[in-house]
Length: 332
Image (cartoon, rainbow, N blue to C red; front, side):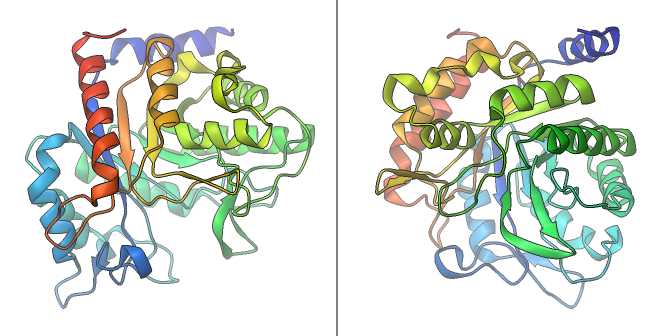
């Protein structure tokens, strides 16, 4: 490792108090759609608010978590200005217990794209929000979120080629330089039927090289890791193969969102129901990520009264217990 990488690792260790169990919610404007109807932000005359369904979930389950974050969704096609969002964002955090840690999931850095992309407006917006809310970090998947200004329904992985790696590394390093808070680059998803893969480089080795060369911290989405393993035919006990090739010492956060095996293919559905395999891989990763800050449950699915849907409750409870034991040092 270079001296710069060592410095980053030393910084990670210095502020590495384990936070424990966290929450991440996708919060679209307009109150969501289909199965997630009633989840998100809504327009109001005084600047926006969370939906009653979100408020009910925060009241019922907010105390389960040590930190909370939401994923940015644009309110309009205009360049984002903090003043257009903060009233609604204030209400999101006000609905949760006081004292929770805070973080932010961006969707505007577009770090996987091979196209030229101006990240300064998104970085300035993020920095202003970070100053207001005290975000511990900002995270974004290493993906192609839009092409020629047109958003994609599901972010594509970056091209797994040497030129693709060179460009993505440069994009990640540039994004980190523009930000006034730590950037966590998230391992991309490889959901069959939701995205496709260009290039033949190994994604784990690719991600390691990018993290080292750009000198960035990382988030590992457990479902994304499994989606890549499934794509390579690594199921069952083989889902642990090559995990050590990832930049585990740079990992600051694990993500878990609802996933499902459909017709033998791995689907990252974000429907709130965790697979047993996700918990098994999480238990495997916890002792192997020495600078980890938190374990994040992403996109819970819940009813109007804020109660989790029945199918999600068992493994939600297991994950909460696993993250708590890791935080307290009562498991490896």
